[in-house]
Length: 144
Image (cartoon, rainbow, N blue to C red; front, top):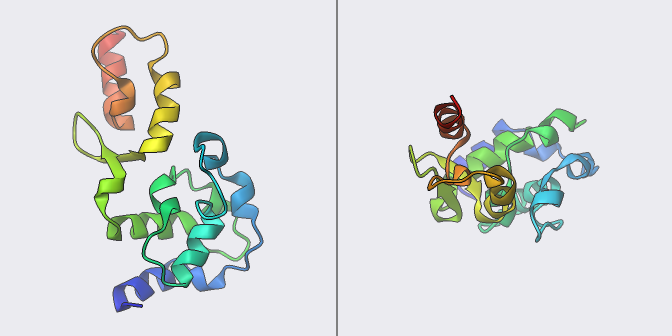
């Protein structure tokens, strides 16, 4: 395990995980990701990171809602850990905002949201292809 990787684990208290599963119980990815499993769950990502695994599908799938970090009784900052691991992993797993280029949701979560976000919208712009900040600006511009 490389030094920067070890520093990420320490910075987010990953070694304190007691595998209680409370983070998994609150994770919205169970609803938004058809392939959600223990491997993609917050708990799974922490355990994979502690084992030094390189390919962690849950890192790209995370919605970054922070529910996992807020509920962890051991004080593990799972969302922070995932955010830092996401920076380390290849960016090719994430889509980018078509307006500003900011990293966005993973493809499976984006497909799930596309129907809900674009429902009833008529036009060339796909709200689901925009980051939250650009989506708000486009919505205000198109509805004012």
